[in-house]
Image 1 (cartoon, one colour):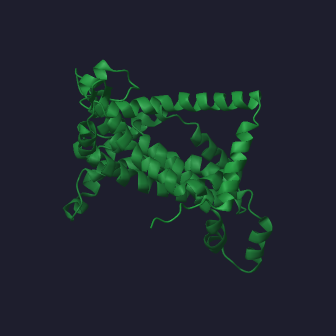
Image 2 (cartoon, rainbow, N blue to C red):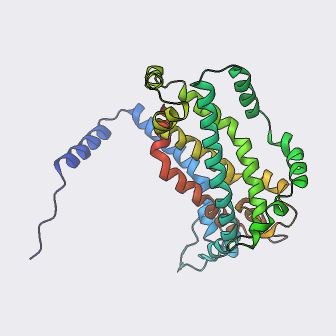
Length: 317
């Protein structure tokens, strides 16, 4: 004997009734507002939809259909234009690049955020001479363009050969000589990311309760103890902001990778360099490029989902 259909909860029914009533009672202005908002959403999602459709089409289907049209023929029904081959090839070609980018982005992000937090605490909540010149140097570092440091960086890593300096490590298990290229990129991104993380943490630490920090000092807590037991636990929202921001910057970087990595770095290339190599030569596979772009964007999407709530709190603070 079949059971009677489940009735919605009173709270859910109330919400649904309110939404239905509000829509029915909406005036012309509100309907125009809703239509405008839907048009804006469609406008911004159109490129994403076209990229997805391109990534699941064969080359022949891409050449014979509109970019945003699905690879489906209705008369007669057919899925001949549908394929996931581009995704398989993209994952296969970008897997090593994704691993290299993870080994690059995770340490560079953690180091730049941690050092920026240390520096911001030291010049904001600790009294000592010459704070303002140090703050000015950090702020000036934010405005140094990438192009201004390319030649010094390339010269620096040409003189300081990290592969030779760390030669004893390459004989250990799971260690490879091309990791020296990743170490060079970690150093560059950490140094370049400290000024912006410093500025973010400083604006956050200026709003901390001075009475709370002073009470800790009166209780005999040291500078490091105050940071570890009071400031650091309160910094979680801002760490989420800096981690998301810096991870995205490092992950999407192509310029430093092209300049610092030696020609034909091969196994040491990050995912952005591997993604540019998907473009091919004379014959372009647009489906492969779109699939590769989506595959390369998955880690940043995961980071945003994992730290989204803390990111919102940090931005609001």
